[in-house]
Length: 226
Image (cartoon, rainbow, N blue to C red; front, side, top):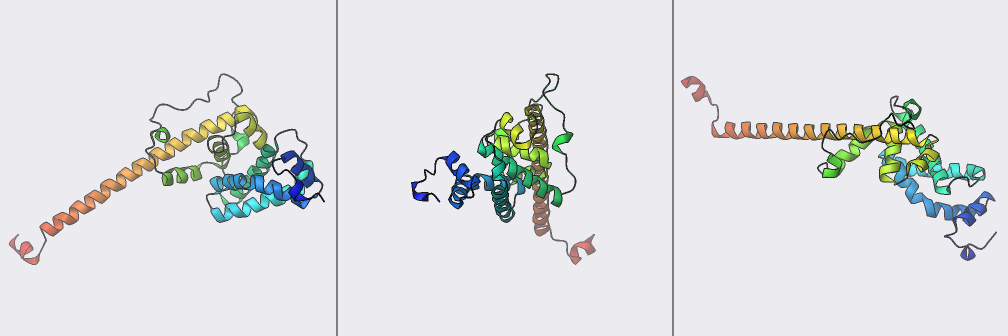
């Protein structure tokens, strides 16, 4: 086995080659290089740190079993994230009601379709008027397929051609899913904003009613005088 101290840890291709030969140091280097980003992806999609950590371990166990199938036809990080996304989607489908499948969306390869963002309403994300909690809750409510594309593109920073490789669909399909995710996310954020405003109004009314009750208490004498 090659001495790990002599191994250039920045050489991803060397680490992959060693891991494919069953070298434990190669696996360790790959884990150190990619585990944080895989965990971040799982956390964004699952919204549960414990479950995300558990699934991250599952991803690298799967990597251990399947790394021999990596042929270098795409970037290793893309191949690994495809593995992670597939496991996350499987977990979400087991624990959630039926959601919109990636297969069920229209392909936007033709120019007759549109992948532009709906601009009929203010962009709450750009305005910064939505708090982080509301945003996280809204992302959690996205269908699994849309959520995966949204996380990969808008949070992880992947381009549509890379996402297409990760999820095994076309770049047009990725654009379609992202458009649907953004549109639904805005709807959810607007709903959250309206609910917050309604709760604020109700709280103000209750406070006003209590204040009036203290100023003008209803007593037996008051009722008798009426």
